[in-house]
Image (cartoon, rainbow, N blue to C red; front, side, top):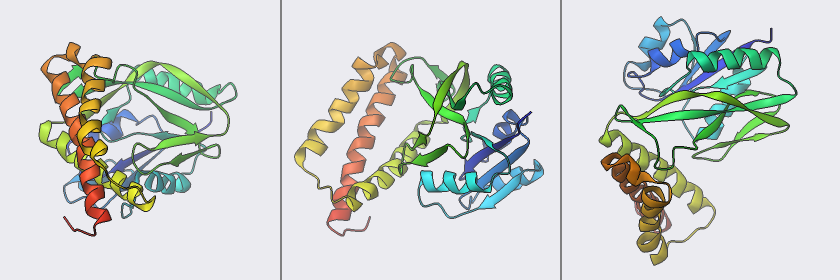
Length: 250
């Protein structure tokens, strides 16, 4: 059977790392690529007998592509530390690498959890990502919310993995700030300027998309928080871009 390398990018993931590693224990090699965590992430990972690579974070795509190049085996399974591979998906993964049927990668859908509560709508009902792929046929592209560029057919798994993306509201805000800063740098490098449309119109439009169009109201107050924070993330992005454009340090 063709062998698998599982890759887990980390930064201060002591809450998640042990469970994440356990959920990909079926892999023949596990790599944790860490951006110099300041908590106990690496201490916990070392006890799990995995390969650890320390690398300064520049952007999500470059970090993951670097780890992929260190992998021993042709099939790669990328796992965010806040994701868990269920037993049903594990069976599909092992079957897929044994009989790939000309596929070079596979989408997997995710069950989204916010502060420990399952979210069914708010835009996450169709959430899917490519997680299993052949490293010679796929490459990450994009600084934030990176996507895999593929050369070949992509299949779908029937079952879902669990995604415990935000532990609490403060964690959600901190991630929006982090993503906003990276996206602002990308826009700045492309010469993008900020106008009133970006700060007055785009944030409320994002709220409406998540709360109404993507049915966030069906998730109740949780859906409201998600929509509100998504709007905040858009506003943060353009505030940070304005600061960069004007040479102002935060």
